[in-house]
Length: 357
Image 1 (cartoon, rainbow, N blue to C red):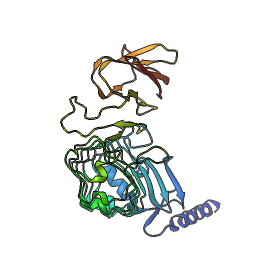
Image 2: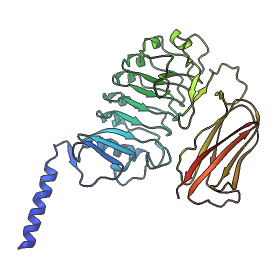
Image 3: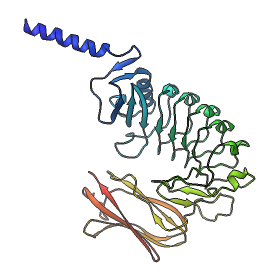
Image 4: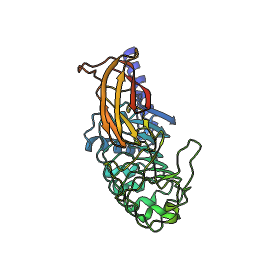
């Protein structure tokens, strides 16, 4: 008798839990560690879950549940923040995103979306239906165009389009009246909409964190552009590709640059490895303001040289190289702290990275 009584009690408790969700929401008894409930309970909006499912399906991503994708923050049952960059670590996705699903516009509660380092070439027309989107980071993709309806994102505040393949910007972008940050560096832009200077941007200054409000270096803006752009102190400004941690002098490509890279570094610099920590490989970028002999060497914590990644003469420009976590004999090195050092002429700089096996 007690056994049946316990079964009935359990059934009633579960019924109450599942029944507490509105009809458009579903109850989740367990959540993976990448999911944060900012406000509310674990009744999550079905359409938000369906978009995550579609994203996984069309890109053949390896997840057992849509809640495992990237890093998610939910607010009163709606997906509010999604980090789905291809960073090579658990913070983002576990493989490359090539396509966004047509139902992505159903993320009407989404405020911030991070899609860096994927291979997305186009945004679906429904993307502009994400009426609450405030921050959109899609740098280091292969975007070739933006939908004409992009101007419908009236709450957009931060728009990062750096390091893509854009050759034009639709005039509707001028309708983004709340836009405060616009990064367009390292694309293929040869012209801008006539209304571009109508944007209410600070064309010349940085914020308190030294990030520019506007930057458009390393494009092909060689003919007439609006005064706001032509006279901007950030007309030839970019940020380093890997961590956006320092500014880079990036002239417009007007046929006068004689080296392969259209981005010229304004000073010697070695960027932080990405990802870091890493397993099994990481990428190291560096900038050379002048030609010369360059060496890039990996050391262990005792100062022993493990492998030389670069040892040759190179022209001025931006470079990056992949390290697979192996020494010069092809043996994988163990978990721990390592150092990488860039040397060129009188310049020498060392930074740290961590392998987590």
